[in-house]
Image 1 (cartoon, one colour):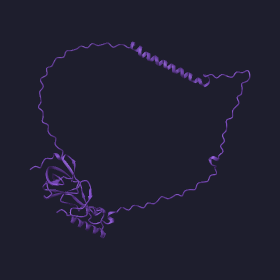
Image 2 (cartoon, helix red, strand yellow; image 1 turned 30 degrees about the vertical axis):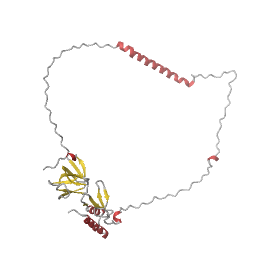
Image 3 (tube, one colour; image 1 turned 90 degrees about the horizontal axis):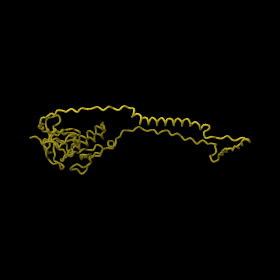
Image 4 (cartoon, rainbow, N blue to C red; image 1 turned 60 degrees about the horizontal axis):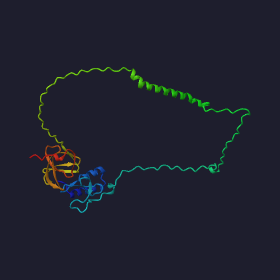
Length: 299
């Protein structure tokens, strides 16, 4: 028998009573026990109690949303104690870094920059000594002294340029005259015998074999999902799937309409050769294959 909302709320209150009595129960055990109180309404929507707030919430296919179950005026089952809702790991105390006292500025006896007397030595003009009477001043030639060092370099550059020009002229005019010319060779054209080919034979075309469709594998996204004997929610329940279970779709058919959809898929029950029907809706995520390629169930 599936669990009703009243039974789930009663067990949740019992679990809260255990916590308030001070029984040893960890956070993981508490959330695991609350997760077992899942209820599925007539429309196939899965409801669970939030272990941190004590309120009902339902899965809309993408995320958990807080709401009031059918027949309930409010979503609150029972307020959760603060020590459970806001429990956190104690953080180690932090010691503030030691404060180093600032040292007072050291007084200086140096005067400010604008009080410094800066003296610059002025260049002393040397008096030009006139040459002795009767002597002529020496001439300075542009080629005298160290300026003569570039003359050998200029001569070497001219010689290299002349050699390069001579090599270019020799390559362009002398080498074609000296190099021997190739002797042309005669080629004899031989007549090839004509070969008569038999007429082409048309081979029969093979009928292409349609590719085997990939198996359709889906992952359960709902917390729990009932597997029915027939494609409707009123038939007998033959198994229950959990979140992240992977199943292989065998066939598809039109069944009971739930939330505007009527597609049901046939699967093999886990660890069994028996088959059952599941409602697709927002309860699965396709992993591989195309569900549209599935055939109808075999009679």
